[in-house]
Length: 124
Image 1 (cartoon, rainbow, N blue to C red):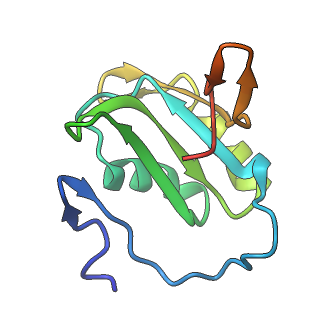
Image 2: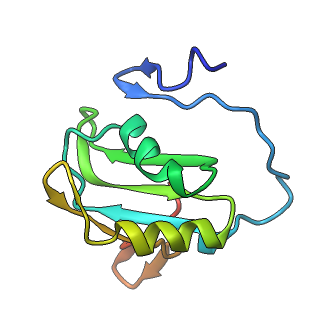
């Protein structure tokens, strides 16, 4: 499994891990973070490495366009609220690859009158 972790498939890095989450339990929504203003050169491995010092990360994602290019934002999910808050406290406003990043709790996907408003969404 470790050999396949971060392997590119169709131009995107994949994560390979054992599943430990109970599929019947809801996600810990406050441990999901939204990160924006990421440099386009940041890949999923770099994002994971940057945030992993704050705690275990079951999931992280960089949102890409149809060509596989980063849109400059992503999501990181921690196991617990304390790790997520610590990452926000330390990384929000920091320079990563020369760009000041915004790190905050991800918000739920919302429906608006004119379609879907993603904003800071944690649904991928």
